[in-house]
Image 1 (cartoon, rainbow, N blue to C red):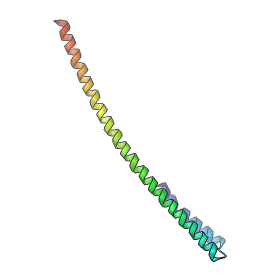
Image 2 (tube, rainbow, N blue to C red):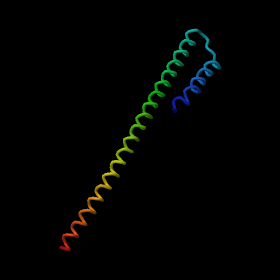
Image 3 (cartoon, rainbow, N blue to C red):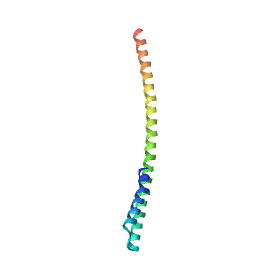
Length: 95
């Protein structure tokens, strides 16, 4: 997301910078275009990496929510079992 936000302005700035300085030869122009292509490729790769990280974070959040729900269920089962054992112990003490 961050890469997408800054990729276009960065490419535009480099292109305008090259236009302001002026290319005196075709070779320099080709070199500038190659650098712009490299920057664009890097920006696309960064955007893909960010999307992948975002998907991984979402999956981790879902897994954490599942684990939290399972822990809450286990806690309530343990508390119910503890209460049942306490009642059984008290009954045995009164006999």
